[in-house]
Image (cartoon, rainbow, N blue to C red; front, side, top):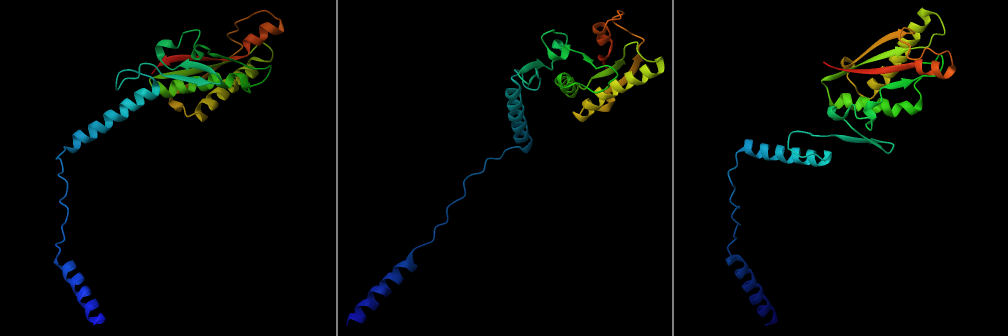
Length: 198
């Protein structure tokens, strides 16, 4: 009798479970969106994000680009390049006597100019190499060339397009201080960055 009651209950459970209909949820309606509009919306969003990253206003136009090296901030905007407060306005790299090795204190300046060229591809730089009067004319032309080349090499390592860089050596031809003191001669041992438009 117990077995019969259990069988009746199980039969009822199976019968009820078979009676239910399986209901599939209807898919949500899909809005027909033009793929070009969707791409444009994404581009607009990306540009707005870029503008916020650079601290700029209008979409699609960067009005000022600021960077910082070792606590010194500077602008890569061509309108600010001659501002004495801007690192880009420093365009002379000095060298030790008979050396073409760039001193550590000038590497930030070279990095700033490298970033300026990367940001402003319509500009280029001619790097002029200069020396003092010590040594022969031929030797000084070679030394000036090595000084200009050392600055150029650092800029290329920073990613600057070689087409934006040129070098020229003046040796002792363009002294800026004619005094014979060591302090005066130090001013002549230099590389000068001269900007122009392509």
